[in-house]
Length: 89
Image 1 (cartoon, one colour):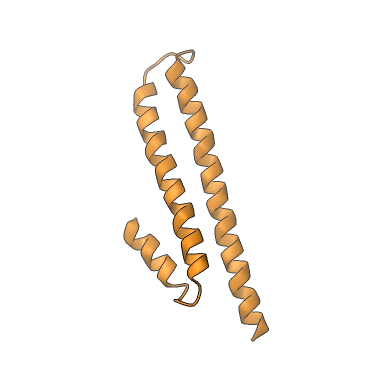
Image 2 (cartoon, rainbow, N blue to C red):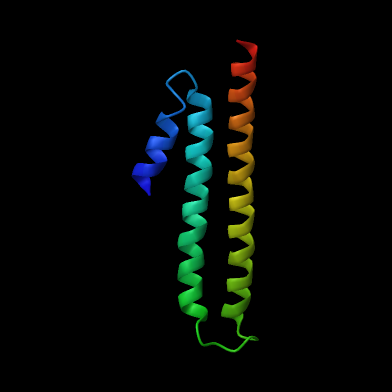
């Protein structure tokens, strides 16, 4: 995963460091949220729906969705910026 992220950021070229940083930070946020979701899922596995661990799972899933949504918006923003640059030429 790290290699794919690095390749993706490098494919933007060295002229767009800001976009590279935005993407890497968004991907890092998703990775942290995914790690947390996996950890909480292990803790909640087999528990009753009313167990506090299930509430943690619910909240962790919401965070994951938020982070993925943010990543998708970042990707769209970077794509739009790149297209504007291409159209300007």
